[in-house]
Structure formats: structure tokens, C-alpha cells
Image 1: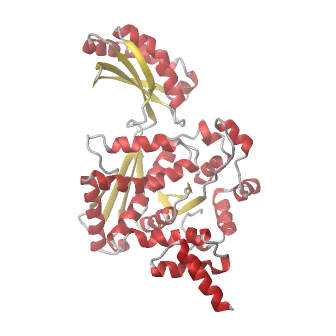
Image 2: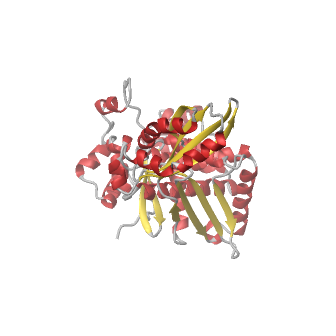
Image 3: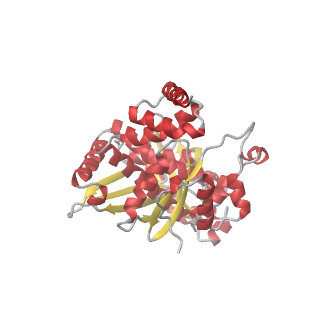
Length: 423
């Protein structure tokens, strides 16, 4: 039976790690070669993806191990340049799986597009006129994508809001579209364009914008985890984590960094799978401010028995069809490694990574401080930048960390000292 539980995965060579992942995800030799090869994305492929392409900028791709979600094991591809992100997620997933791992849910794959009507004289009457034509508007929108409707998706409902602005009251129609396994931006935009003339006729106003909203609060992913306090280091550690969370929940200056840590993990999976990191970022931060004050995306509490319970809930507009997910060769392999069967499952997995990432950061803050683990991994980059040869790297890294002097100049000095000892 496949398992994502590994001990010492980071100690394996790159080749051995790839072989383990290939066995887990049943990768072919050709797919393994693509991951081994520098520049799996060709310049020709890049030119088809963006305008004015001049080259490729690679980002390291790793896998987070130990994740058990709803009783299923996952290896989770993560594309990131930041040290400690994958290590922290994997370590927290290892701790969490001992108590059954993560549990998830979602609200479905509904995306929102907005149709802005301005210069409307009787905004409240106009709102009701639009609602009265709900069925006709839904039919007109769904005519634009009959295949999506056949698959069970399409426009399902609408809402109409009166928005106060510097130019007066505006009538904003939200169309709610089930986009199934697509992120759905093109679909909802096309439907909004089609409905714009009907909205103008109903309101007597002028329609300007008709475009999706990245505050996808009808497309939420949720994850929950409970961890025995002893596995975290005892009651004092649990209390420290909850205290750190309470600070972030109350103060937007702290919440910004708290949520950035969550997005370290989320963005890495979103990027690896060819999804839109900017859309996910904007949706997450807007959702964190939905009450009028910016706060945390996670919550941390203590159970009656003293265990730690964490939850996360955020918009997760990711897809498995369309965009770079189906074009970028490595993104396609990342999806294969994950083994997800739907965009909703993908969103739930990503939410779990965000929750694990947050737990890792809060645990470090509550105990040794964030710098020790982060700088240990950062020291690898510093040694490489200093030109330390591979046979000296471990010794140089260890000494920098022990001295708490992770700098290029110190790496060079230690290297020179080691060379001097061998003469």
C-alpha cells in the first residue's frame, strides 16, 4: 500500500528521492527524465504561454512528505525558492498523521462574476427587476457553455447588491457559476459579457465592468487537524501556539506575517500545479479582511483534553483543466504525483499544506524561535553563493549555524580555515 510517510527523506540523494516519488506516483521513465532534465519547459513551449518570451527561470521543485488527508496518503509537489518551507510542512504533517491527519470539506466550485451598472436612477427597483428575471438570465448565460452544463456545471444563481461609491450608487449583479474542474475565469467572464446588454435593459443604466471576482467566497476549501499536546512538546507549547495565534488574530501587523507564512506553503503547491498564485493570494487576503479588519486565515484552540486543534478556511479557485495546468509539462507531472481526481480535492489538499505550514511557524515561534530552523537551511544557499566545494559544505554550514553567523563572508573565512588545516 502506498504511503507518504518517510523518515529521512531529505537525506536521500536527488536521484533516490526521484525514484521514491516515481514509485509512489507510477511515473514513466520519460516522466522521470523530464524531472531530471534542466529546463523541462522548452523555450518554444514558453513562447506559447506568454508574450515576449526570452528565456526560462527555473524554480526548485520538491515534495512534501507524510501527508495523510481524509485517510489518503499524498506526496505534495511544491515549487519554491525559500528554504525551510517544504521541511516545515513535511515535519508538521508527520506529527499530525499520528492522530489521523487532516480532515477537509469544501463549498463547491462556484465562481463569481460581477456586472457593474452605473447611472441607474432607481437602484432598488432595478435590483428587483434583475432578480425577477433570474431564470431568463441563467438560461442566457448557460447558452454560452452547453458542455459545462452537460457536465453538471454552469450558472446556478445570481445576487444583486447596491454598492455606494464616490460616483453614487451602483447596481452590481453577481452571477454564480459552477465551473467544475476549471478555475473558470474565462467561462464566467464570457457569461458576464453575454448578460451585460440584458442588465442594461433591465436597469436603464450603463454597464461598464463585467469580470470575475477573485474574492471567491463561494469556493472555499476547509481543513481541520487535532494534535495530541505531548507530540508537540507539552501543554506549554500548545499554550504558546495559541498565544501566538491570538496575537495575530487581534493585530493586522502580525496577521500579515502570520498569513504570509500560510501562503508560503499554499503558493508553492499552486505554482507547482500550474495554477494562478496571484488569484489565490488576492482571494486569501481579501477573505482575511472580509469583516472589515484584516485577521488570520487559521484558528488555533485547545480541546477540553488539552490537545491543539487548528482550522483553515479560504477561497481556493484552482483548476485541473485549462491554463498552464494542461500546458506546462512539469505542472502536469505535479498533478499526477498528487493523484487528485478533482479541482475540489486539489483545493482541499492545498488548504492542508497551508495549515501545516502555519503550525510549523507557530511551533517554532513558541519554542526555539523562527530563525534557528530557517537559518540552518538558508546556510546551504549561503555556502553555495560563497563557492564552498561540496566536500566542505557540511562542515561550513554546521559552523555557521553554531556561530549564528550565516553570511557569505563568514562562509569564505571558514572555508579558508579548513583549507589551511589540510595543508
